[in-house]
Length: 467
Image 1: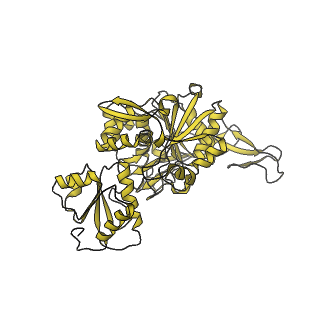
Image 2: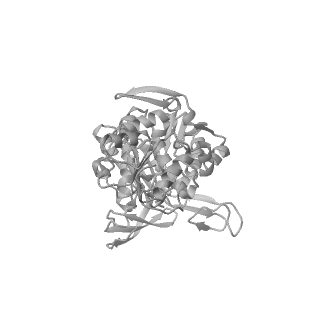
Image 3: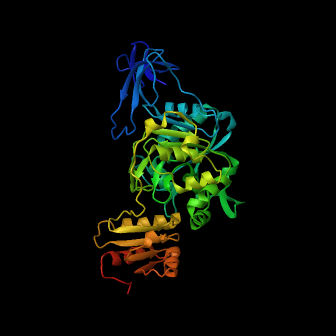
């Protein structure tokens, strides 16, 4: 698809969006091609950081209006061949689109590749990711631009009953997060309701031996899952599957992590009604995600699928990560497809989009001298630990390990000293395993008290107890 912005009076064209002609001040018309032929080919045999897979071809496309555009492809073509994209043949297909200049066009193009009809939607729940107060450029929360384009698209299709709903990580304020991320401004612009799922009425559902408290809106509306695609130090990646955790109550979230989130997450997703996921990798995150410790990845990609497992697997493959354990478990349970060779991918080719991202360091915290021993802690403990560490930035000292959660491996604990246990789970597990700790910090202590206990350890290398 080639798009140009054209002034029909002056016959001037732009490859990026403009509202008025700079010459005659007249209105601009968007010109979208429906077909293209190949008029040039260059083969590239030398890899580069942005293009690690070789050989590949750069083909020059020309549409029916005479507009030209280069495109990267792994396939071999001949000059004069027609170029076209095939639509999905299966319901579990993943559509992937590299964004050029117009996010709205990219969104429409991506959804148009799927076996998907807006007519099937009457009332909609959009579930973005808004985990903490962060600006859009930090790539922590869903990009407000993609939410804006999605709402406009839904309204164009005659869907007016739209609700945006999310809850932030425990310990963060959902309204503050929605405001700083720009999500609230988009909702106010479109006069769309915003719901805090942390205050929702929950429906209890029993599934595979688990009692799940799920927001009733999930069962009353058609869900469009709108996660930002990120690295995640706990489960490998945050995406289609992880983003749905927060449609549950805080109690259920803790239970999912207590029973090992890498095993319970696939079971939980299996218990949900079917949903469409649009994966926001307009920027995306790499490094020590999923919080603001991570950094923007600048992927310029949109993903879409009805299969959340397949979408996450394609994202992991795009970033050249090993398949996360939760996706392996999901595949074994029949929740979705995770083997790349079995997933139908439409739109841009997977190998053309591959770009090695920085993975998350499981031990990273905001403080350079505090390392995290994460026993798959629940979101409240995880966020609380990171906040404590953030409060001590600027204070020097001596390295220590902050232990959270309950699922510690022997490898994690081997050779570790100067351990501080945070939360009842870590305190109990380490005590039962005979692991000595310097300080036990209960999660119900006052924030100032938690910080002072941690500070007393980091400043004293000889400290062996709180006494």
